[in-house]
Amino acid sequence: MSKNIILTGDRPTGNLHIGHYVGSLRKRVELQNSGKYESFIMIADAQALTDNAETPEKVRDNVLNVALDYLAVGLDPKKSTIFIQSQIPELTELTFFYSNLVTVARLQRNPTVKSEIEQKEKFKTGVPVGFFTYPISQAADITAFNATVVPVGEDQLPMLEQTREIVHKFNSLYGETLIMPNAMVPENSTAARLPGIDGNSKMGKSLGNAIYLCDDAETIAAKVKTMFTDPKHLRVEDPGNTTDNTVFIYLSIFATPEHFATFLPEYKNYDELTAHYERGGLGDVKVKKFLNEVLQETLRPIRERREKFAKDPKAVMEMLQNGSIAARKVAFETTERVKRAMKLNYFN
Ligand code: TRP
Image 1: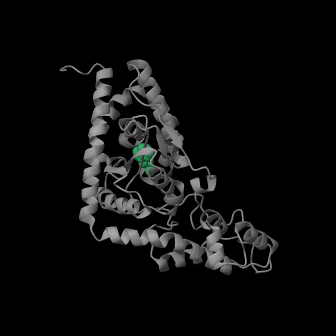
Image 2: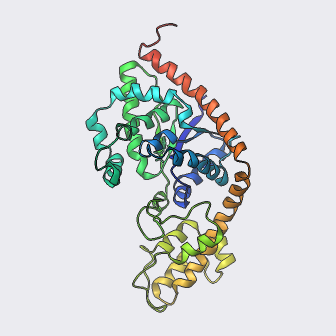
Image 3: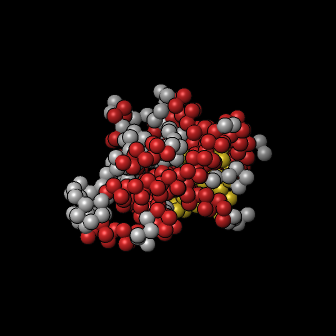
């Protein structure tokens, strides 16, 4: 009972990419396999609809894609409860109750929601209420499963802060009922926000600068070729910059000493490679060739597992159905507790 509980999730609006992998998925698998946590992994289809209401088929199709990405990286339904948000109606009930505890001004101050609203062209004519209030629904997701730990990327920290405020307010008004969650972000700040292949600070589908977990070998190789390096590093002899250099940023995250030993034995490790590049005399082509080998090695087993699971989509959907049934039991208990605390238990 005193076990730590994890809740985390992703919006099913596209395939997951290597930014998701190093920012969050990799950690989730590690936590799952540590045996120290009970994990709930949610495909946030209802939240995805808050800015995709016109294209429900896109959200629906990506539920399976995200589930396949989960299984591919090693999330395991025997160890984690993997489920679909919309199949847990208690979450909307909790959202409705919590919305009384949050002011409009507070939502307007949420920096993630604020920047998402500013970025979205289609919101210029008006912001859907559902989108504006999704931090409240995210508080429902987290508290419904009594989560103590929420492993997320940096952009989700404001959601956690807002959830903690709701928990605090609820408990002080109605008595100790909800569990206070904590965020867990990657220790490595580069991993927390992997740039796109074009050097843009964010990797994303709409930006067209992502490497996906399902990309085939040729696609990965082609993407690495186009990757952003140091624009001033024109000739091999020129000294190069490695700090704003996407190829080097990726190597710092993905390249292990074993990769060096296998594919580039002239250098023992990342530091030796960067020193040579900065001194001059090391060309981009060679470094990119190495990054390609490293990414191929890292992504091949993930892609192969994904292909295996993709052969039986029915089994994957069944896994999600079972996970949703198990998750609902927990959310139901929390909701009963919440209603009792709010004096809404008329008949028992
Ligand atoms: N907002 C998250 C994302 O965009 C998805 C999500 C929904 C989530 N509910 C959550 C993440 C609860 C952590 C906890 O990817």
